[in-house]
Amino acid sequence: MADVATLKIGETEETLPVITGTEAERAIDISKLRGDTGLITLDEGYVNTGAVASSITYLDGEQGILRYRGYPIEEVAKHCDFVETAYLLIYGELPTAEQLEHFRHSLRRHTLLHEDMRSFYNGFPRDAHPMAILSSVVSALSTFYQDSLDPSDPEQVEISVLRLMAKLPTIAAFSYKKSIGQPFHYPRNDLTYCENFLQMMFAVPTEPYELDPDFVEALNLLLIVHADHEQNCSTSTVRMVGSSNANIFASISAGIGALWGPLHGGANQACVEMLERIRADGGDVAKYVNMAKDKDNPFRLMGFGHRVYKNHDPRAILIRATCDRLLAKMDRTDPIFDIAKELEEVALKDPYFIEKKLYPNVDFYSGVIYRAIGIPIQMFTVLFAMGRLPGWIAHWKEMQASPSKRICRPRQVYMGPTERDLLPLEER
Image (cartoon, rainbow, N blue to C red; front, top):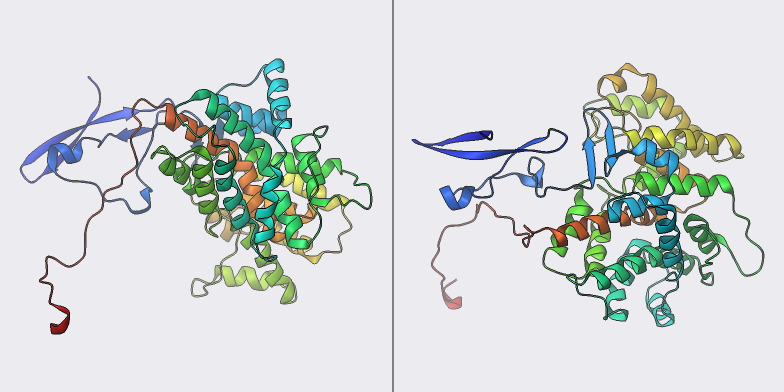
């Protein structure tokens, strides 16, 4: 007999089925609770609520485990590049050599933006945040590709997936060029995904641009470790919007908006801003560490600890070595890097940080790496969106294919006034 949970309500008892996932995660199925009892559950922020049964990413925060489609993130990062990782997430299996080459070729054929889209950039103010541009232009793609908006047509979905994966780096790089007043640099289909993005970001017509292989490798790794992270805020947003049968461009645009928030994708930007604050205050790391330890001080060290991981963040472990390698090879004239190294040493050795499991997280290292590559701070979250795109697409596709798909419609517990008499305007 399947496991059940018993819920006692007054003198009556209700039995609720208990389901078990492939990694032995257990959940009480309350899908019929309201129909059987008239009651709902209240869980603000959905922190204890499983909204979906998914087969994409497994995350165990207590053990520090992250797996894409069953493959440990450490193995994926070691053996795959970002395009191969994207294929795994979107299609569910690692590609054969032929499938991967076809996927790479397909992406190369869709990197260009429609020339009419350039006028969108002319309409934005020069100081427009790149995330605002990214969200707007992705949403606008639906107006240029009205032949591929049906979520129920596999062929239309497939071409839209390729367009999104291929064009997002172009959209992102153009937003940066707009902000600094430089001409747009078109994509080059002879380059890899990461090489192409870096040349669109930094190349200028007046001189050749030389790619730094360490920068390419670092960017590739960062995109991989950000590619998916289970039911986070932006992924849940993509699923919620898509549940209404909104097209994939609209759904991804909404996810970009959710990622923009400083409590989500903006955390790596907040981390570098904190390092800047310490530098401006004389670079006294010990002072800020003591401030963080003081429970009466509102200051928080950004980039340490994680809401889900109660152990080391496996993504941070992966990119720490890359961060150290980049800093070692560079001309260390930027004091931010020295402050970051000092903070890292404190967090890894100080009993206070170890006891509270405040290890440097992925946001700490990624912000420092972006800085080392030369990515401006306002572009940090844009890079996060580029990495997270295949995860968003995978979840959108999984939701659309689910036989139990329903439009998302959370309930609420009303706490407002009870019924009142409405007085005519002249009597108020």
